[in-house]
Length: 120
Image 1 (cartoon, rainbow, N blue to C red):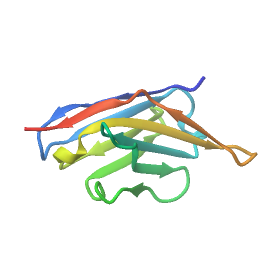
Image 2 (spheres, helix red, strand yellow):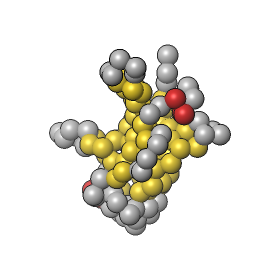
Image 3 (cartoon, helix red, strand yellow):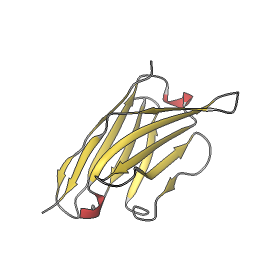
Image 4 (cartoon, rainbow, N blue to C red):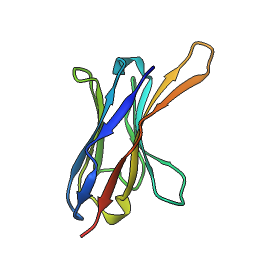
């Protein structure tokens, strides 16, 4: 069974940086899309950044220019570099891996989440 394990969350002051990492138990190249989502209590989980196997990375408007998603094929991780952090970036960050099946269906895998708190 595929497992995704996030790490790197914590408490950081506004303007600071954090790097989240998602360790994947299967080859990261086998996923059509790797993505990071964020969830705040009382709100739906929202897409922050996505990295397709082929094509351009995409970011939500709120993090564009500050966050960078990347895949490390040697380490088998999907990372999220977060710079110039703001209090509104606070939330639990989840790693997601998506596979497109030959039938047209999708398989989605989730990590357990890592909390990020941006506060002075």
